[in-house]
Length: 81
Image (tube, rainbow, N blue to C red; front, top):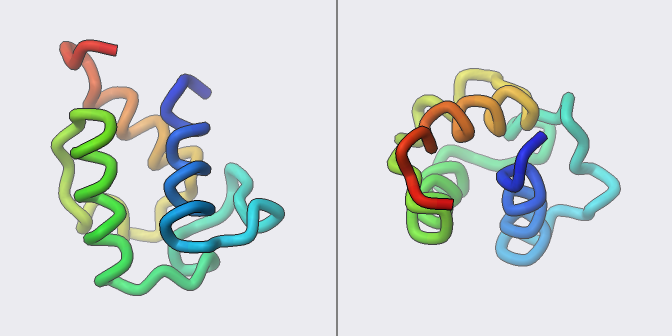
C-alpha cells in the first residue's frame, strides 16, 4: 500500500484510540467498532490531512482498510503528495 495506509493507521490509533493490533488490511470500520459518526469524522480528518475529498458513505459500505486505502489512493490522483 502507499503512503495512505500508514496515515489511516495513524488517524485510527491516535484520534480514535483503536489498538494498533486490530488494524490490518482485512479489518472493516465495523470490526473496529467505528460508528457512522466516527466514520464521518474520519473522512473529515482524511480530507484535512491528505487533501482527498471523500464522503463517509464510501467508507461505510463494509469496505476493508485495504479497499479504503485503494479508494483513497485512486481518489488522490492529481492531489499533490
